[in-house]
Image (cartoon, rainbow, N blue to C red; front, side, top):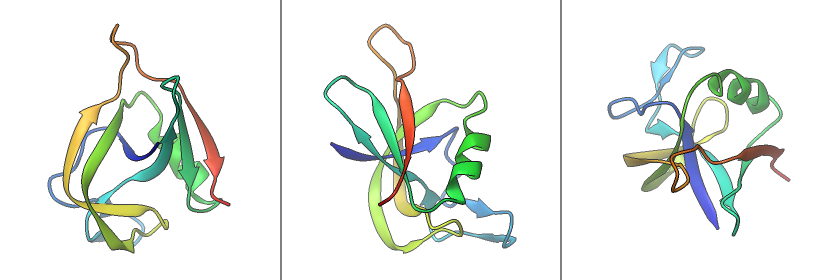
Amino acid sequence: MQIYVRFGDCPEGRSYNDDADTYEAGVSVYKAILNDWDELSLILPNEESAATVEMLLCDRPVYRVEGRLLETVGGDGEPLIADAVLTLMEDVDGTLLPYSIEESA
């Protein structure tokens, strides 16, 4: 099942793009596939996103994000969601879900 995820807490309203020194149109997220075994595979929009994601993974929890998908993308080509609602992704025993990273085809 395709879902959207975010690493770390959600900013209030919109993500900030440090490189462009401006706010994005919504909250930055990444596409992901959640399989039947609750394993998460990230689908990155481009090769440059891999470095960003590796930086974001440092001690940050993974959240499932629901809301209104915007047509506009973020500065790194990532999807943006408005009216974001986050749910911490963890197993029943409280451990965070395992994940892998893939590049978009």
